[in-house]
Image (cartoon, rainbow, N blue to C red; front, side, top):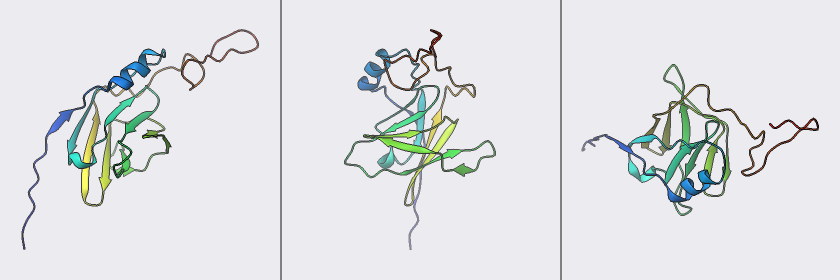
Length: 139
């Protein structure tokens, strides 16, 4: 019988050049101020939010963990999500998330969380598109 020791530390996610370019192509705000703590084996390649949704990008050859949102009372809940290519899109934002794959765990903290999110000025989620109503108003 043995024991397993765990030493944790927070480390900052490096900005991804592809994400930076995508952010330059739209008027949407990109927040990549996230820290991670735990087993790096399940760490995403990149994590960011746009003030509305949270994005976890993974190399396509890696096993992807389950993602749970940390609630105000400290409990974990499975958020509504969808997959877009190599990215898991969490339909919302939170102060933190917990990633789990078997007994492997990682915490992800949003250092720039704002409960108000950001206003969708274009009225659409399609980059480069703007919704214009019949009366000529935007959004």
